[in-house]
Image (tube, rainbow, N blue to C red):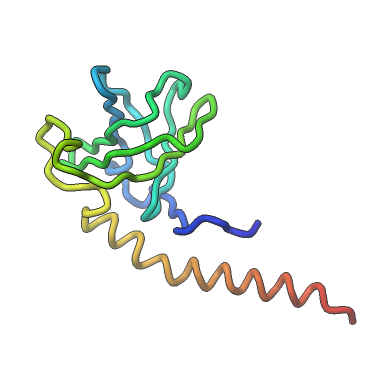
Length: 136
């Protein structure tokens, strides 16, 4: 399948314990989630019940002091697709987290190291599809 996202997604499994996070909406209790995949533009989150989430919330990785404002793009019964939002001083959460998720060296390493390979993979897939169309 041809990837149409602006930024390729990468599995967060290689992040280990880092992938366990919390969703904190305005005036609501934190909800545990797992970051399944991540890109420069957003992430896919696995939750127990995705139907009760607000359209905007903060994604928190407490053990590493990270946060990222998010907006829901899509959701189904147990997953939420989010886009990462710009951070302004008035949107900064009232918690101890100081760095953004995208500012984390571990995430930056994951995304920057794999991006050239993802682009190459997409290009090779495109070439292969075109080659298969050529009559013999």
